[in-house]
Image 1: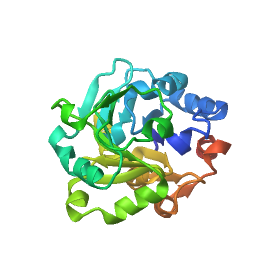
Image 2 (image 1 turned 180 degrees about the horizontal axis):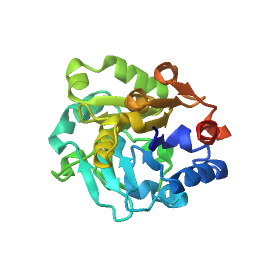
Image 3 (image 1 turned 90 degrees about the horizontal axis):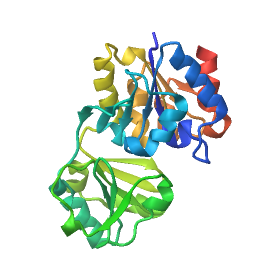
Image 4 (image 1 turned 60 degrees about the vertical axis):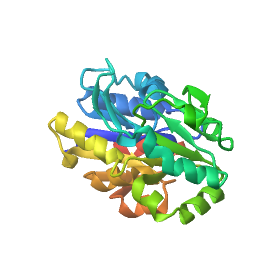
Length: 265
């Protein structure tokens, strides 16, 4: 029995204007009112998605959000952290050196803000993401030694494709590398995924993956789509995601989430 709906944001729940449509809001609010858990699953921190949380009314005691692609599970109403997993500053040395040697940009995120590395070529992450995150310009050598969530490489699609194809084994073995958008590549802790965070939350709420329906479109949604009882690929999803999904709905600009939910509930 489906008791939880997990939703990627960009190009899934959000349309091309980065908005949740009236139809999607109405449908999700009705299901939430009827006792279905609605969980946003994103690579961003909670403050960057809070307007969407409020818009959907996901502020009850047992409402949670999966942030940082599974790295943090946070309760919405008081922002109490159920689980957090990240990387140390030293963990980024490998990818920072590679970016420096190959004229590539890099941004490093803690669990609140983004650090644009000024000792590397300029990143396009701020413009591509188009989200109300705090960006701070800083040299890598000046970063504080504390926990961080991930690193981001934001560049043209071809540039990222070439970089990924040429990463040495030591890079591939050190990070979980995923594309969250065509122009955004993320470097996460090994074995990190949205499914990792969802597993923790499901157990906390007395559920398991047999109770989960998940919607997504991109590589960083792979594990949760694969693990869910009902993994739903958007009509605009990558072929890789469609291949593992149990269902395929219409695209994000035509209320694909609401369209599918209405057919099930």
